[in-house]
Image (cartoon, rainbow, N blue to C red; front, top):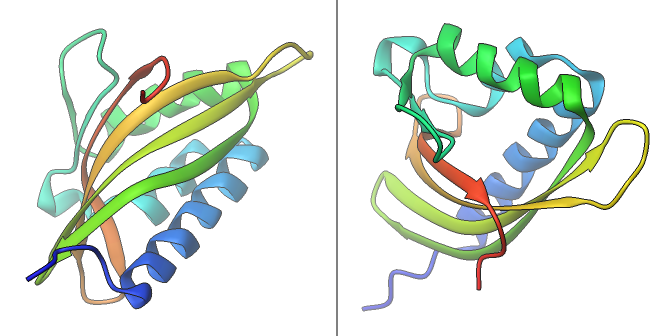
Length: 133
């Protein structure tokens, strides 16, 4: 049995990524975290690869405030999405455009998605600079 995500799951993850991109472009780190990650009560975890893991909306928002301060937009490009039951994971790329111009900065990430009451949201997220392959 294949665990490649269904088109429905891929579509929801695409919609959530589009919301992430819009919130990033608007510079609203709090909305980005609220709309993309699981509820704070579920202890969302993020690691930017260069320090300790961050747990909870306040810490994750602080991280993204730095990103939206340095970059004007983010572009999420899904590569691999797998799902089983109420969990899924995504291995993908993100491209950030620096404020004031310059070349996009490429990040690779692995996000674990959880089906919540209203939609799918990211439960844990690991990202680091550099290409996926």
